[in-house]
Image 1 (tube, rainbow, N blue to C red):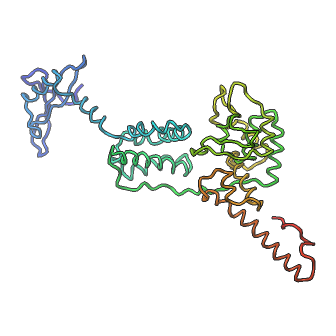
Image 2: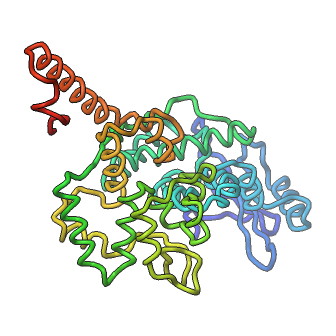
Image 3: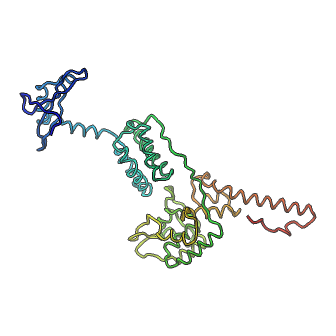
Length: 384
């Protein structure tokens, strides 16, 4: 039932309620009633003083809407909504080219649907305030790591920039501050931990999908997404190469097929109905690592915060860097890093090896100065 009593006029379908003008005077607010597509519609026609509305004018509006000469208020609102470039609408436009890159699309779609859509989806960028963004950041931070918060805010910023650069909508007049994230944590295993891990992997020979998945990460430093996408056609046993398809969204790369990996893949079981080396359900591409990877980590006694696949990639890189036999340029190519800056996190390991070599040189010179034959007592680098 109407909240305020309606007073009928001399015109059918036209009524008014008694309200107040801004100056406090009593003011009539006119409404019209009619049917559109079989449904009864009641809409405000206007106010007596503000809109100079009368019962006669309200009746004219009603007739024109019945005849279809004027859209209803609801139709006008829907039309206006279609003209608004809300974040939801920007996302629909933005996602089309993104959907061609499966990994990026799935990740960003989850971030948008899980965090941005409910909070800000119906707003245009120009309607956003720093408080809106702060509330979004605080909501995400309740149950997620700073890195996730940063990625959500980066996606929001990309959407706004996307709309602004294409002339779809105005931008915002404030900066979106993102949390600082220390993403340079370098996990690596000690020789004792590697021994424990390989022994555990041997014990998991009955599950070659899980065991060999981890071995491949350790022996090649491949990212988990690259292992997900690895197909048998990408393994060139004749030339000794592995092709990585779009590593982290970039162009295809090749890495050497070392002897350990050659033997691993030659013995690895093949699914005749799937092109993938580690197929998922129905022979399709995997989207998650094998379930027993965490069981292997626990059985090997590795730290609870050790990320099995990411950590194995770091272990691969750390062992090469600390060997003193691989420079950072070669390591960059093996890891398919786009820039040397990404490989620089391993520089301190190489520097430690160089320092040990330099210390050995000083000891050899001291031996020579003392009259003994250099290198007789210490023929190799001191242990770490």
